[in-house]
Image (cartoon, rainbow, N blue to C red):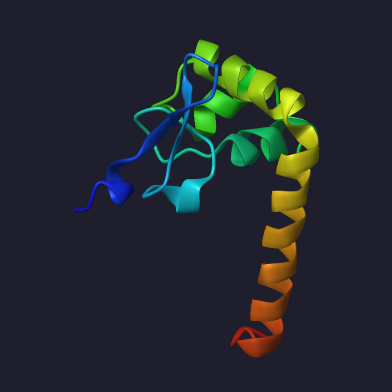
Length: 102
């Protein structure tokens, strides 16, 4: 591995990091592949409480969930843009690769 792939950025949040070689550099809960935006979507869109989110991510603690949400709110504009880009990518894939289930 090169030095570039091992790069880890501090975010100013104790449990959130950005690693260029994990999840395309999306902010994640340190030591996991759980993206901040996935936690934010569960909270904001699905209306799940932090305690409920833990059931989907049992490897993440409650304080890590709260830190991820804090990071999301501090960086909401950028992360909402990333969510939108991901949604557009999925739409393009659905057109390109239609479901075989009818």
